[in-house]
Amino acid sequence: QQPVQSPQAVILREGEDAVINCSSSKALYSVHWYRQKHGEAPVFLMILLKGGEQKGHEKISASFNEKKQQSSLYLTASQLSYSGTYFCGTETGSQGNLIFGKGTKLSVKP
Amino acid sequence: DAGVTQSPTHLIKTRGQHVTLRCSPISGHKSVSWYQQVLGQGPQFIFQYYEKEERGRGNFPDRFSARQFPNYSSELNVNALLLGDSALYLCASSLRQDGNQPQHFGDGTRLSIL
Image 1 (cartoon, helix red, strand yellow):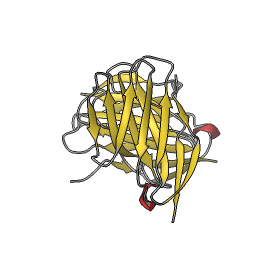
Image 2 (spheres, one colour):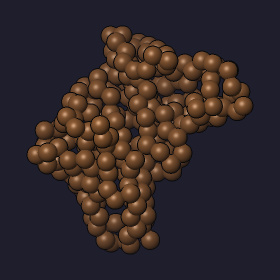
Image 3 (cartoon, one colour):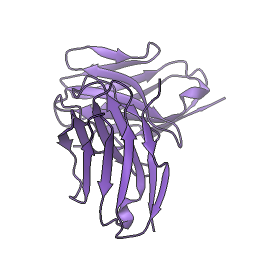
Image 4 (cartoon, one colour):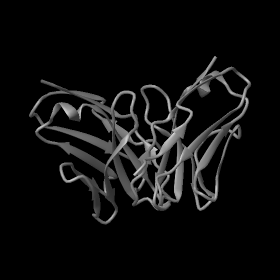
């Protein structure tokens, strides 16, 4: 079951904050976040695991509500380089088979 | 260190032909996954291989097959190509199979079917 991301798109000015949400109808083992710029490969940002463990970049923060099967990615003090499409990938077991959402397109303007 | 490398970068085929896409994982990574990404959509899971065995398969027809070699590189084969197979095919590698490992993507192979 594909996770649902919201919003579909967001436009920010440099320095503004944004929250991107990812919701699943199934119990999740982990949530992975990636950013993809146009014409490039997705780049790993963060993993959130059932039980609270997180792995990822220091400047990225996220949360994982296991009971609600929801995750949120927090982008603070946005920079132009934050522009791109953000994907969450969810996993219901521990096999590493990710199911990605449709993405959230983030545009940061000067 | 080299990242995930995929070849070729672009490929044009006609309907009914077959295609082989190749992927070399990051050194030391034993798991390789294949994804199909259609423009404007997220990557869609096709296969995962770990230690040369198939460990996961997405909702794709039997025309799609893959294998992993002893050096952990991988091939994705697609037979009887359809127009709808036009997409970016991404390979991702990770240290192990389990879901607490980040997957690192290659730049992909853009396949166009005429």
